[in-house]
Length: 411
Image 1 (spheres, rainbow, N blue to C red):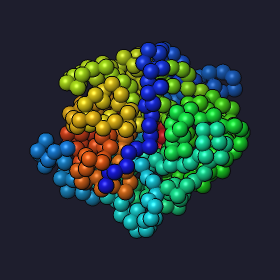
Image 2: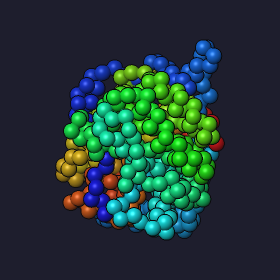
Image 3: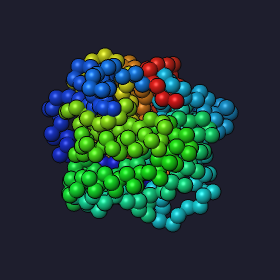
């Protein structure tokens, strides 16, 4: 079932109203992203050097469906496993534990179901996002909750994807359930004690970093959309500790509004952007207008290639009016599958033209069956699984001849 709306409300109206007319930006390992420069500067010993660049069934024929592709994609093995320099063609897989905890056998089988679906789309990467919790906007206590998968359970799922040849990312994300009465967004939290907040966060993350290390996960996202805490010195200690536990990439995923309005000052070498850029065009706009809209936003940061930047999360509702607010996770206007499909085409074109690291689409829910058509009476408009036009657009992107930025240094 797709009865639940996503919890990643990245596009609060207050943020939109502040950002639409704002100038553009990003950060520091410190990666320092400066206006006019597409490459980060790494501060080493006080001097800067260049970083090593790291639906309806009638809408499509059966051959367009991921589940009806060639027999080679029916096996649990990625056709072209990711290697450094290749694009990351992926999906955000969001996992909340159900009230009645599923068996280990169930979750492993569910992971295989998603792996098979993603292989059919041509994906080579998956990011496994999961929630953690806070008492309120000023709380400094973070915790796993009933909906938080345990490290051991995450290991089982990550292993399924790793064995199938996927590039893997583990991505904890702050649940907003206790923030709804206070602007309702993780990017606005103001802990009473930041030092206590970071100590609590370190305690929470350490077992998950160990799980990522155990499964040879490629990337661990140390934080996601935490605008109000970016630049805090507490990140230095936290990232240093994480790097001792986890040998892969430690990254940060910035929200699009902060990316475009200021420098992202975070002590990481790898940066993603959760990109929901509004484009003021009608629902009938051609893909080229959407491409122009994205490039207008990106050009405020830097023109030309962006080989160090990953679109860590993006998506849009299959509905009228979505181009004006693609990150509106809760609207339920009239269905329009073409809006979603054209957005996917445009984003893919931008990523390729600007030599970016890749894309992770939001999203698949872990307990859902990706092979079923969404129940549009209850499902999120952002669901793409079971929408043939969107699936076709994703598959076309993921199986394109784009070779990638050629600069990714991850192993």
